[in-house]
Amino acid sequence: MPVRLTVLADPHAGALSRRVAWVADADGVPLGTAFLRLFDRPGQDHLAELTMTVHPAERRRGVGTRLLGVAVEAARAEGRGSLLAQADAGSAGDAFCAAHGFRRVLTLVYARLAMAEADVGLVDALAGRPHAGYRLVWWEGAVPDNLAVAFTAARPAMDDMPTSEADFGTVSWDVEGVRAAAAAIERRGDVLHTVAAVSEADGSVAGFTELVVPGDGAGDAQHYGTAVVREHRGNGLGRWLKAASIRIARDRYPRLEGLLTDTADSNAPMMRINAELGYAPTHTTYEYQRGL
Image (cartoon, rainbow, N blue to C red; front, top):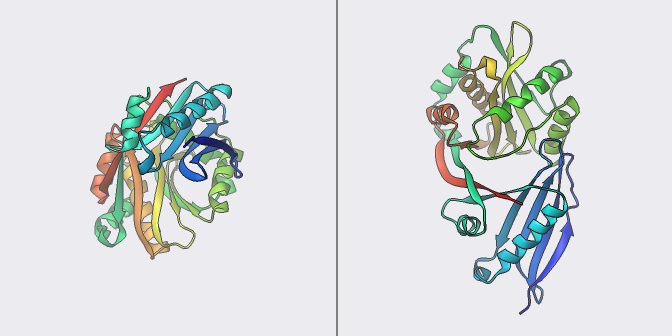
């Protein structure tokens, strides 16, 4: 049966990126899909990200190769120079990427903290330990007006984390962009929960950690990242922030079952913090990149 590819426009284009999608079918029977995310922010507008799925029964019949081909063409037409993709270690996607010109550039370790098994005493001790010259603040949703400029200035610390050989570009943040990102999470019904360390010396934000909680406060929440501004590193702020986030989430959302996180295996400090706090590895994925 001939395979037909149908292009779809994403009806929910974001403020910072947009997507194009394709469905592969044969006589109306879906075979696979591909989603191409096109990043539009300066510093990332050379990148596209591909997410592709082919039904197990249809693999090794050229469906994936055709979907990849149209995605590559579209990315090139948009002036993109690099294509990102992610696959679980040992999966069919892992083998596909390796065989189709992608280079493995980053290993991500996924882990989960089961709230029922968390060491409450340890978390409370770490979260409650004072750090001279710093104070903790937290909020839900968009950053408060009094911290908006300082928090925005700290955002680039996320781009300064170890990412092995991966090129994720650079992001130029402004207050409007920070608020837009929080609004996008709110629109889908989730809650963005942020804990930040503020320098007593000048009121700057020295570090922060973000957790996205399901709107009903149940199930698993997802860590979106923990970052410490370079000049404040070495003071134990990362551990303090993450422990405080766990403690506040536990108290505020008693129905949460777990906290999910993913960390580059090259980010040794955060890997140690996760292990100390009781996060158990669940699986490993690889980030792949291909020049266009």
